Image 1 (cartoon, rainbow, N blue to C red):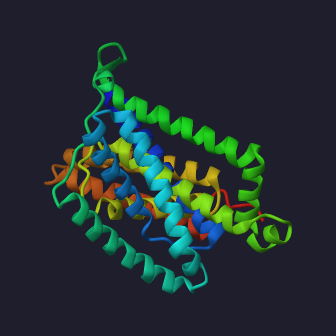
Image 2 (tube, rainbow, N blue to C red):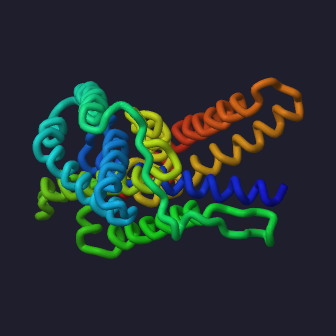
Length: 305
């Protein structure tokens, strides 16, 4: 039983850190640019497809990963310059409708370029083994541990960037009060472009890392969008620390909640316990979000004003 709990704990940690990669860019775009971007998940999908395409070209996982990150970041910067600067001046409802249309456009464009069939990214041979934990009671995939390590490294890197650098000071100022930051000499528009490109790069990193575990398919960005928004609502819009804490909470509650709920339902001899357990775990995350909205409307760690 201890091995099962540890396995699910690590799965929840991995899921939470991958959500953090998505939510970090989303919360900064929302907090700094005051832009509701429903198409953020599409960058995750595009990054995954680019990683799969580059892998077929170079036959090297880490080379494909780097190329996908750079290409998606450049695409994000281009989109911000060409499209999102105009969307910023529109009401939030118009932003929602426009970015929803972008989801449909991204799905169809990706289908035209890469085809409708799911793609796979080959896992590096050096990371395809398992690590023995708790003696020999648990063999946990090495690749998943590497994903956790990468997520932790990115979290530390973003913390240093946001809290220990001049650029981070500008980002925090922009998240707290963009007009005031502009009057103090911060070049807001290049900052917006950088933040959007950074968010796109993090999406590509998440998509490429999960490619060997999941099939890279059309529409995969929509399924991750709701959890990403739950993360930033729980943690606080514009807060990097809130994004990390919110992502870990969502990851742990969803993963461990499935284990607990499925076990309880099986004990009660409920049919389709696994499916119902997953649904109840998702409901727990939604209940947490509702509770935080009720007691702390700005999230657990709101951006400082």
